[in-house]
Image (cartoon, rainbow, N blue to C red; front, side, top):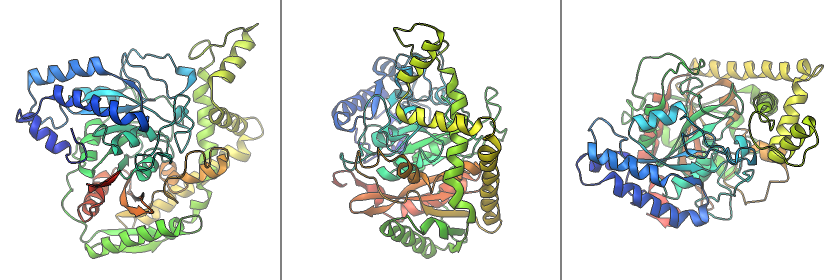
Length: 485
């Protein structure tokens, strides 16, 4: 199957009409993975036997016209648990962990009839911006194998961009869906905090984490996100809302829509070529009938510092359970209980995870809580108020997703502060709990540029409407790694 020249709607049409069998589609998908993943290195585990059984059962039952995802393959980021399929979070700490249940989002995809083909690489415990922090392997960018795919959902993004699979799930704590989507020229969608259940997601920052989608097109993203939204009694942070079609406004255009362009998102640190592509997109929205005006989000400059204190503090708490006794890797040749704790965590966690645990533990320690964590929480409130003020007058915010295009593998791995700045344009959205997406806004020096679209809480339909209008007005989606389609 050529996933560059089809979409979920077309696959569903062929499956429901009997022109295509899910078993054949699934088998062909594994052939694509065997061929392309030798260099992309996106997959950590494959689910061939169960996928074949699922596909055969779907073919035997037939695909209903109203089950648009039935029989279609999908990949899952490796920090989302899958019953009977290894889930490592790309860490030595969980190298042999085989869950005995499905995360809520995985169960929902199975209920929708999707075929789970495997687990995708990531930065260890979702901590990183390049997938170089994986303890398993380094995934490459689909457009240039010498460059990073972004992170932490780098495996999910690269597999979709390379045409191995049509869709994948990722998780986004500070931009971990949108940043790799931008680096690989695909669509990444982070929903409103509380819109999608986190039950079964291996936690990084509990007040920031969100499960979302990575697809080649906006319409595919709407289909996938529709399948996983909803209240979950096992996750008390999910919000009760009536069922709705998040893609209901696709095709309506943007005439009359008011779009804000924050001046802080095009300033110092943003590659002028990237900024130029976003300004070009703004002109395109104006030509389609929208109003685009410059606004200010004055507390943006404090977002990275606040985020790393809050996220690291929550991570230090969430990861304390991996102690070699209750969960995870256990060190050998230990002399006493203290040795078990210290050696297991020292050997099981990678450098980036240890760095963030230490930062978080320090920020929460006696005497430092008021000086660091409390101040970061106050900044978070100010950033959320900045967004609230803008959304009093505007339907949407547009901005670059990342300051630059994808960088070379190894170029920033020894400089964590510079690496952290890659998420400077996505982090404020997580601190405020807003929905946001990244779509392909063109290319700079042959590499994709991401356009970020941000909306008020639970206004995902507005993002899909504007993103689809932009996608329809350009041929960026038709361009594929290796040349024109």
